[in-house]
Image (cartoon, rainbow, N blue to C red):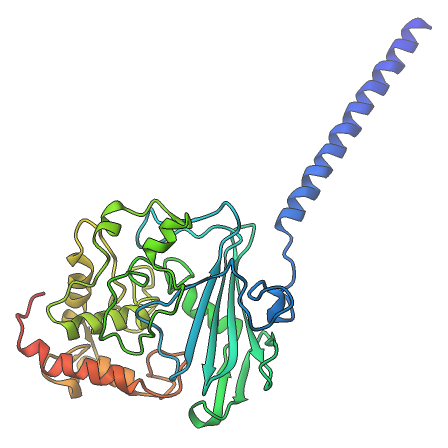
Amino acid sequence: MRRIRQLLALAMIVAGVAIGALSAALAVASDAHAATAVVPLPERLSDTGLYARGSTTRIAPENVPFTPQYPLWSDGAAKRRWLFLPAGTSIDAADPNAWEFPRGIRLWKEFSHGGRAVETRYIERLADGRWRFATYVWNSAGTEATLAPEQGVRALAVAAAPGGRYAVPSRADCLACHDGAPVPVLGVSALQLSPDRDPLAPHAEPLRPGDADIAALVARGLLRNLPPATLAQAPRIAARSPTERAVLGYLHGNCGHCHNAAESGAGVPVQLDLAYDATDPHAGGARSLRALLGASRFKPQGATAARVVAPGATDKSVLVQRLRSRDARTQMPPLGTAIPDDAALALIERWIDLDLINTPKEP
């Protein structure tokens, strides 16, 4: 009998341990699920954290404004941008060409026409490392913006926009551009936030009070591991003329997120992103320039090759043709714009017709 009681006691202990282990495993699984569960996107922009509590116009003080020096062409829309970093986090700039953004970072970009906010785009990095994108459409009174449908809005009535119509991108459209770059955040980088700003950059917006550059982000503890040489000598595109510097910067900002080493699927396989090297600031601009001047776009059946850039001949340069076109089959950029960027085209044509024939062939 005593032996039987001992065996029963042992069985109860084993069962208790098993139940305890199962409960612990379920608790861990529940915690893991809670950590990765995605909270639905807020229906209102005011609930994303952009504005101070109780306001839809006053930016919350913890959100940092910034203005890249080579902005994307968006059919003349004016823009404002902000980023938020959770307490105790920072951007890791150890790799100058692929900054590592912390989980919980949020970024906003507001588009306006004629002084009226039209949409505000939103990017967030989730707790599991994934990124998500959304856009919020402003009401006509400018008092609130609400979450746009996942498929976007093809033709929003906006009187001051070109043709009185404005296209709100779908989330798939957002991914088409942001997924092609080394990191999904396009306007926050050593070059884009350099204090040495390009005075000829097309559509460059002046810095607003409080706008952060790389030095300000470092001083606030929001940017770490930036190579010391990058602070000592602010990033600047090495070029043979001011016009060339602005052209390369424009192509970097507007085309480099698709035309880069990581994205071989671009129609014309030429690298236009400017890889920055603090030890050799000339490297990025020189590489991009060689790529432009050496690239051809061959026509089928052995026809004469068309040059991406034909020095002295804008009419024979595929780059100009694609930037000017608004045929959906050939236009560049393929998304986010309905009219050509005349200011940038004038700059690029001046560079091709004058600079390139008056400077040495090799960069």
